[in-house]
Image (cartoon, rainbow, N blue to C red; front, side, top):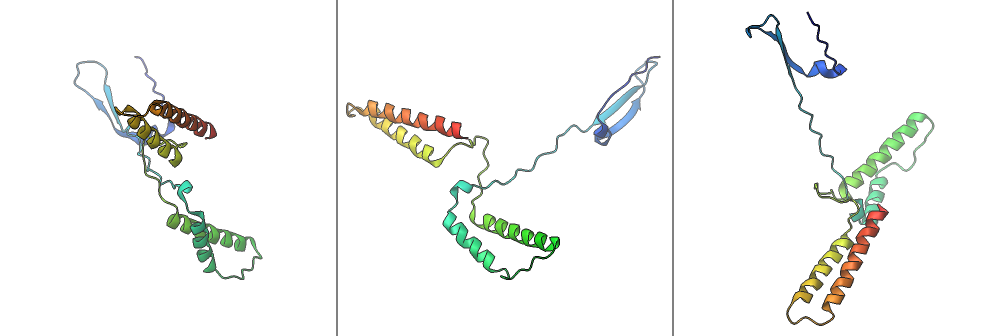
Amino acid sequence: SILDLVFAMEDFAEQVIECSMQDGHGSDHCAIKVQVDLMLPRKEKELSRQFREVDWDFFRKEFEEVMARTPTEIEIETVEDVDRVVKWMVGALQEVVEKVVPVRRQSVYVKKWWMKDLTKMMYECKKVRRQAAKRMAPLDAWVRARALQNQYEKAIRLQKKLH
């Protein structure tokens, strides 16, 4: 008789759906059927905020309004008092962030280094290239299109390097 050993991770037993012996295959051994749940849990998508798009003057104004709702005289004498004040301030900041900072659209194509200026430059490059491709375009149209394209590519490289 040969003993087969199976090694598994310690939380593997929680993933076993069924474990049973199967007979009837005409052998002197018993087959063991193990059914395991191998589905990975889906990760909940986190909402991320676009802090680059914030109007910081409006943010400050909203934060001051939230802070004005607090009692002005706070006595801090114990560690619990410090914890309470910090908890209140963090809550106030989160309230303003949820109100003022826009939520980022989820995309699989997102590039963290991409800026709105690059989008404007891209549209400008396309516009100049289309104008240069027209039949009656000025003589220097392709030169201008190439110069804008070079400037756009240089800006992309710079943004990638900064992030």
